[in-house]
Length: 87
Image 1 (cartoon, rainbow, N blue to C red):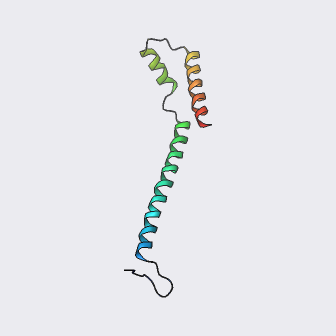
Image 2 (image 1 turned 30 degrees about the vertical axis):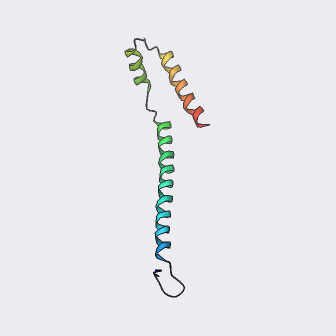
């Protein structure tokens, strides 16, 4: 059964409508995934999940004395690692 919508030459079968809707949903889902991924990557670059204060706290919990030089060195290392993954 081929149901038609419209008049004259302007018709689209029910199967074609269903396929277009499914295709639209798939394209929207894939596009949404990549947009969300790009947003999250940018967000974590601008707002890293760990900051210097948290790093000092972790070092103290591990029994290390967190010198400013050591904290800066670790933060620079983490930043270099995150930019290396980008390439």
